[in-house]
Image (cartoon, rainbow, N blue to C red; front, side):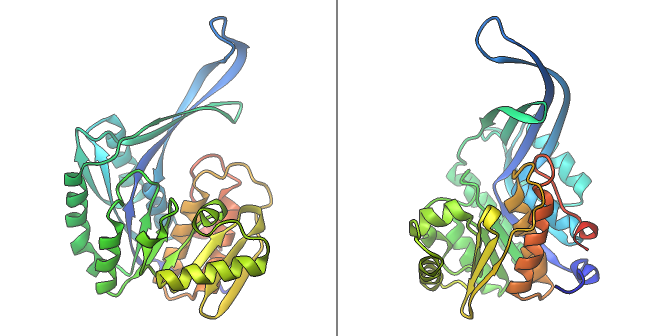
Length: 309
């Protein structure tokens, strides 16, 4: 790989659209079992909030030096206020559409001795009116950006992603998608789709060999009219499929501590690299390096340009 393009990254304009979340961590000590039920009693000693989902993608892109705009849905609640505060601190230009009837997606994790003991999720699907408002907010932003990232966590913000992809293509900007579910027809026309191993199996079934995977992946790529398909495979690295064939890179993680948000870091790195004109094979290698760094950190975290360099 070449030197990290820090100066070019500072000129990159990345638009992130998708499911905005707040990741809340309660850290504590476990010293006894509850007398009321066979569960550990956690004495909370520290609390921490972090950006999750599409907001974490945006935060990671900013950490690499890019100019980033985020569009998403939140509630009119305490979690939304925290998301806004954290986005301001991160340097993300946010367009958050708030609705009192739609609670902010919140994942609350209870941690004991660095191990996750419990996760509690608060979420609801958005109304059609909210989705229309999101579309109206996103539409005029495409022209001012080099690349758009659709971060789909199946929370509902991208229920009409097909129309957004069509609009992005009309503006001739690259479209990167982190997919969810088994209906990949929704992502037809994107530039790059980045399923992980499990998501790829949902889309094309279980493969029996690398050759079988390549055949299924290229078939999906052709069917969806994609420029590239990148399968992230945890300890097996990443495999890229384009019209030029298959390219693979081995995983670089020395120690895996927490995989939470690693896909966000990979996606953000790919977006910034694409925005500065790096080709897909080299972009994959930068993303692989970033993913290898972030899984060594606790919770949803970022990788900076300095760490990559």
